[in-house]
Image 1 (cartoon, rainbow, N blue to C red):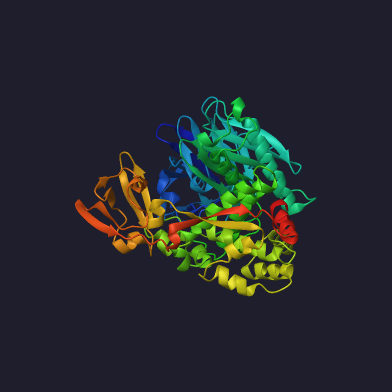
Image 2: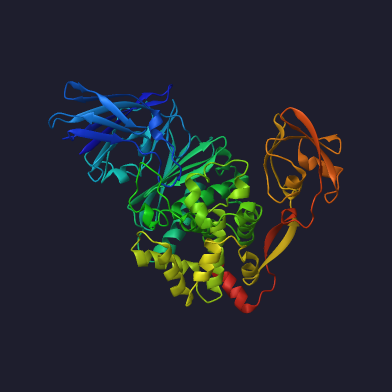
Amino acid sequence: MIAYRVDVADTHSHHYRVTLTVAQPAGVQLLSLPVWIAGSYMVREFGRHLSGMSARQGRRALPIEQVDKTSWRVRCTGRVALTVSYLVYAFDNSVRTAFLDPRRGFFNGSSLCLRVEGRDAEPQRLRLGRLPAGWQVATAMPALPDGKGDEFEAADYDELVDHPFELGGFWRGSFRAGGVDHEFVVAGALPGFDGRRLLADARRICEQQIAFWHADATPPFDRYVFLLNTVADGYGGLEHRASTALIAARRDLPRERPELAGGALSDGYLRLLGLISHEYFHTWNVKRLKPPELAQVDHQRENYTRLLWFFEGFTSYYDDLMLLRCGLIDPPRYLTLLAKTVNAVAATPGRTVQSVAQSSFDAWVKYYRIDENTPNATVSYYLKGALVALCFDLTLRQRGASLDEVMRGLWQHSGGGPISEADIAQVLSAVAGRSLASELADWVHGTDELPVAELLQATGVELRPERAGFAASLGLRLSEGPVSGVQVQAVLAGSAAAAAGVSAGDELLAVDGWRIRRLDEAQAWTARDQDFELLLVRDQRLLTLCLRPDPLSALAGTLSLHLHDKPARGVAARRRAWFES
């Protein structure tokens, strides 16, 4: 047995103390901490937060030798248990690492629990030390049946680090879906949020997805836990085998005010429900179905795959679609969400530079390390991957089939295990009744435009062009505020701003001699299709540039999606099937 004890050492300095006990250690026992966490494809060097490490066998202190940035070596004598103690600094209020302050604690095992090399396959036990008064514990890791609720056991190391822990004085509620207990924990919420509505809406999402994957079967877990941390501003999630860690803005929670009870979803709450849907869908599509390269995770280095367009992109396609299918939103609102994805990809010049397969492979060095050139050199495997899913779905529906059948077929084909691109191609072709190899080559490995417009039109969805915002039409991504002013974050390749010589880092001051606080203010005195002078500051120097807007540029407009009023009978049935099942 490998055993960990996690103590709250000092909430003010944000330190956990971890004590690792290794029964019958090797003569030269290697220990290591992961450098990344599954689902977040970037090396994060968790070992940099460890300090004060000591080792003992019985009463005898042992020296610890650091081998590299994340590994340590202890030379042991005999079979007496090895005990290693160390501090972990925890002040990252995200879903990926660990956090501790006087109000709340949170951790992933990958940030706290040293691997005992050669012993990954053994059961791993984790015990929580005494917590501050009033603190609760929430996790999907099974508790020992004869314990006090403070001791948990995982079958192996991979399971140990796949169950995050939430600690503190949080709100909790529960529901059943698919015959399985689900728990929902909310930390940091403002008083008066509508917990009953959150539970009811989450239950609808879960029941819809369980039915999508299994029909009459039960889901592949005995219990599921949502761990939601609410903050002033934040958004994100990380999937786990029987839980998910979420972060969202407090203002996005539903409120108990009578005028809002049962009413339309706010944009913020809708975004939160989309996040819940996305991470729950991952329970099947990435935690069970997964790239073969991630079937056995190497915690010490990058694990490359070219398939994130499927595992993240297809999940991004289904997250909002599930909200429609379970009745939380109507078709027009779903099309508004879909239009945002269409326009976001269209406004990314990098889509003609990088394929989604290459974007998947490059995630380790590009996706999580955004800079001013990112939109010009890369494409999101989330966003374009969702449009690839849309294209396959609508193509299949023209043949009387659907992407739903493909997803379930992959689950059955693999037994809920690893799948390769060859498996995806095989099931796609079987469902379509013809090979879709050319579509895979063009849409996944190529950089040509996707046939989104044509396929939507054929499904009874009308595309209407609309003018983009002033900054977007010029190819500018800005940060605007009363203190910071108008700062250029990125300049899109091929845009009017790029042609004029505007650069990331510039501060925009005036248009045609008039001071601006926001660039859109200039529309009050400047015609959008006429040249104008832009005064800016670069490296403490004033510069004046002449911008020549291009009304024919793809950046000058956006698309909105609408239900066609009178679709043909076959088209109407196809659209209805897409929206409903």
